[in-house]
Length: 219
Length: 248
Image 1 (cartoon, rainbow over the protein chains, first blue to last red):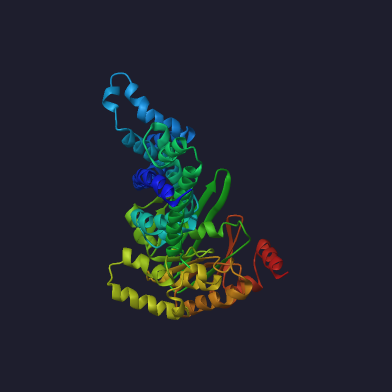
Image 2 (tube, helix red, strand yellow):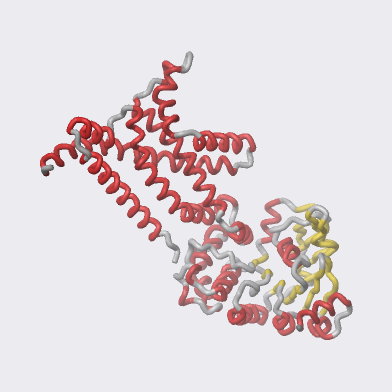
């Protein structure tokens, strides 16, 4: 196994990794705020809104992500009447699926963060005269995000690996190019290389979150 | 002149009556110790004064303004206005863990009071000096001892310039060797004629610093009097029983 061969197979895989990274960034940037809004909806006084948000979270967490991706890529266009307007680029459809799915998980993570905040924090804020908005933005949310950080890091690492599901909807990405090389050259090396590229990505992400946790240690 | 006037306060959780016809008055500059067994309704009563608990009946009047009159609460702005006269110190400190000591003190005044940043800063410095924690101004609560946390909590409450300070078992969560530093700060406040209501199990503090002691049991205000009266010749059996049990 020569160095040239490694470089030769790595090139398309790294190009595929760009798709992986792009999907990751789009999904994380959109699903975290969306998940946060979902948490607020679940906590809402408006019963219907809360109920809808809970139902949404239940459905997205209770069905396989793969099923959801297939649904968005190939299922929606089959719907009668509206189907023809729902034909999306497969990458776009996959992004949508990832965002909607991960938003549900992030919503649960944030809800856990909210539950972990002692009721004394609300009482102290109230007695000190803070209004609801001030209490939420200055006391509750900063603590919620801090508590949620380790779980968010974990979820983000899962997202990196879940991007491989693009393979199933035929969007070429890292794993796709690895498998092409395996089949073409009849060698296991491309799989190992793909594994190493994933590890590098998750390592960077893990270090990034460690840094954020360190920054918000409050000690 | 009565600064706080409480009459016929009632509260129940379902069938359980936690406050039964509680009445008492607190004059300006009074230091009132509220004693009684656990579950006697002391904390609920205190929390009712700052609207952390809603009562079902009775009246609370603070400086001639009704917080609640015959079970009917004033409007939210009025409630805010009235409760802003009171500072509260909790058993479990309830400091904001994501803020430094100084930030804990300055957050609420910055958001709520119409004062310059310089005024707020100078007051937080003064108060931290007063509670002996100026050297920990930039520490986070996680790095403080329980006694230090409670002193910060007292300073934080004082930042809002309250007329009345309420203490809900301020030393109950502390190791015995740390209660002294907190009681010392409270004693200093009393000497400066702060009006204080202290729910406490510290009989020493009640005897030494309070000028009025209220004994509660089972949701009722059993008796009140000067520490000398109440501790040496309690009128009621229940008070006697409580004080004797405490002595053991």
